[in-house]
Structures are given as C-alpha cells and as structure tokens.
Image (cartoon, rainbow, N blue to C red; front, side):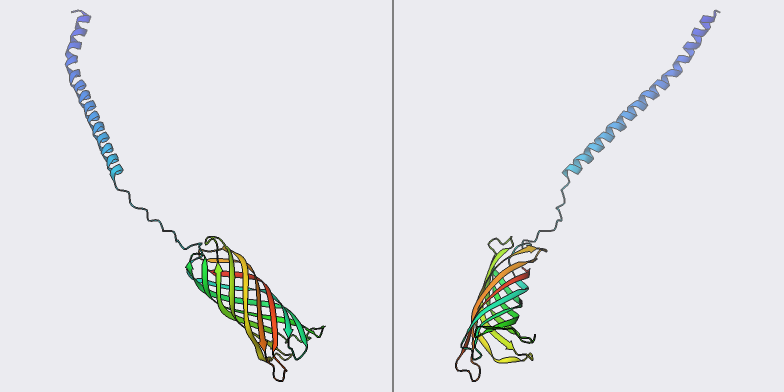
Length: 251
C-alpha cells in the first residue's frame, strides 16, 4: 500500500468526529444570540417603564408673599438728634425765645389697610438742653439739670408709594406736653399743654423678610400754653423741631 493511500484513509476515518464539534459550536452561537436578544428586550421594557413612571411632585417650599413687602402689622422705633426753636409770649420771666438741642425717640404701632399705607398710633418724646433769650440777652443755664422734656401722642399715617421699596413719607398729629426742670432737676409746674403736627421723609433697607432699617428726617411744629401761679396772663410757646433719625421697622 502506498503511503498516500494510508493517509487518505486515515483522514476519512477522522472526518466524522468533526461534525459533532461543528454542531456544538452552532448550538452555542444560537444560544448566545437568544440570550442577547432576551437581554435587549428586557432593557427596552425597563426603559419604557421608567419613562412611563409618574414623576413625583416637587416638595419645594412655597415663597412667602408677604416677605420684603410693606403690608400687614407695622411696628417702628426711631431714635436720633433733635433741635428746637421756639418763640415765647406772655412770659413772666421776660423770655422771648428758646433754643435747645438734644435727643428724641418714638414708637409707632399700626396696621396696613392696603399695601403701602400704614395707619396707627404713636408715642414720641424728646429731652433737650435749652438756651433762653431773656429780654434780648442770651442765658445758658450752668446746671445740666435744667432740661426741657417734650412728649406727644396721637395718630399717624405712613405711606410707601411702592410697597416693595423703602421710600416713605409720614405725617402725624397729636396732643403735646412740655415739662421744664429747674437746677435741682425738679419739674416746674404747671406743665405746658398743647398740640403739634409732624411731617417726615425717609428710606429703609430690608435686612430680613419682615425687618428693615433706615434713616428719616422729620419736622414738627406746635403750640403750647401754661398759666404759672401769680403770672399776669397765659404763657404761650410756638415751637419748631427738626430731627435726624435712625429707624428700625418690622413690617
């Protein structure tokens, strides 16, 4: 037998064993394709479910409609410098005029019937160091106990043209009283009683949702009268009081 014939016979005997291997490879490939297709279908279904799932509402905090806005309850305190010029008539001591300088303070409480418009009541006071003009002669008390203490109480209006801004104007009227103390700090009776009115312009800056600080210029005028014991008549005083103030407002 020739060698090449033996080799051909051996190849023919080995060839049937290759067929199961090829079939196994084909089956493995089909199984892998089936698994890949199943995974693709599962991913597609999961994506559709996620897209169709309802979106939970946002639990965001609602904005406060009253924040940074001049409305609702109103409370203000102010403090500053005050001066006074006053003309005097009917004085038994011969006083013609009074000049004075000192400090003033006020508390204003009210409400807002409409945004920007404030209606309420107030209490105001000032303590001043006076200089008297007596028959044309300037007299400055040497004792620091000599003071003029003024007070006023009544209604007021405050108006913000834009409730979201800080510019405002204020007007007020009220019952006024003045007490003068002597060199020992004792009040001189009787006190002067009368009335007064004021007008102010200011601007405030919000430093919180409902709280603002600012400055204001205010001008007051009024009249006071008293009847000292033994005086021939009534002593009258007509005053003007300018003020420069710092304000703090809850609104």
